[in-house]
Image (cartoon, helix red, strand yellow):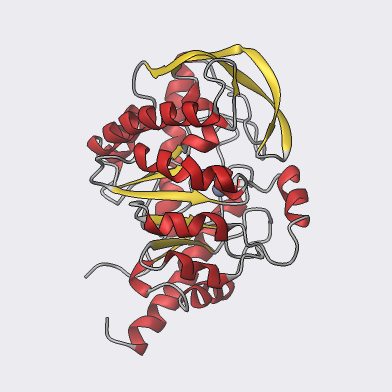
Amino acid sequence: MKKLLPTSTAGSLPKPSWLAQPETLWSPWKLQEETLAEGKQDALLLSLQAQQQAGIDIVSDGEQTRQHFVTTFIEHLNGVDFEKRETVRIRDRYDASVPTVVGAVSRQKSVFVEDAKFLRQHTGQPIKWALPGPMTMIDTLHDAHYKSREKLAWEFAKILNEEAHELEAAGVDIIQFDEPAFNVFFDEVNEWGVATLERAIEGLKCETAVHICYGYGIKANTDWKKTLGSEWRQYEEAFPKLQKSSIDIISLECHNSHVPMELMELIRGKKVMVGAIDVASHSIETPEQVANTLRQALKFVDADKLYPCTNCGMAPLPRQIARGKLQALTAGADIVRRELQTSAPY
Ligand code: ZN
């Protein structure tokens, strides 16, 4: 029998202090060349072990081999100049210095496939692998070549599709696209955002997910959240289109957010990764708090389609706190799983 409420994380976990600066997003690496390659693999195994010790069902690489969830992917592409940087407004929220698209973009070779094979060698558990989504990629760049967000998104979608097929062949079970931009650019989401995402998953046989959140627990994001009012209804814009799309799983932020749970009605029929762990707070949830969030979600999502998850990546958290949160997640899921099994035969 398939396990009910399989747990997973949104993606990133903290890196060891010998690899990167603790509690720092996008920290530079502390190792170089060969020692860096070996260090990344060691960190990947440690993050796998942390997930296994906590009892996480669907494991990931903890994003230990990437410095940034978007730019590490872009670094491997032709057509982007990392020396030529421009300051642009990201997610309509904060300014960042980003590389420039100077010519046609293409993928010279696979980006994460070796890492995925390495993880596959070390576990028989289901693996979820995160990639940036096309819309979020274009929103993290300055484009001096295509001069069209939509055109560039279609190009990235093709490249992501190539990478996704190789990840699938390497044994990845779920490929997840991170699209925080879906919570910001509603017209574009509906005009071409979901369409480019579907191009990125074309022909895949493994499961596919889209993660849409309100971002890491950094100041620019927490300040933005304060302006969103008492009800966060951003998901209302993208969900109807996603419900009709061929994406299998929608990953969303829940616990401690002001997202009205009933918005999950809009994605009826989809599997839902429900964020039951707040990544913007250092306080560790109790299993009962996690269980409560899951019970609320069960009013709108069928039990066999509910996947307990974290709200977002945990990269900037202290490692001990991240571990505690993973344990809270699995303990909370255990409580609700027991309740489901005693209340009705499944
Ligand atoms: Zn996120």
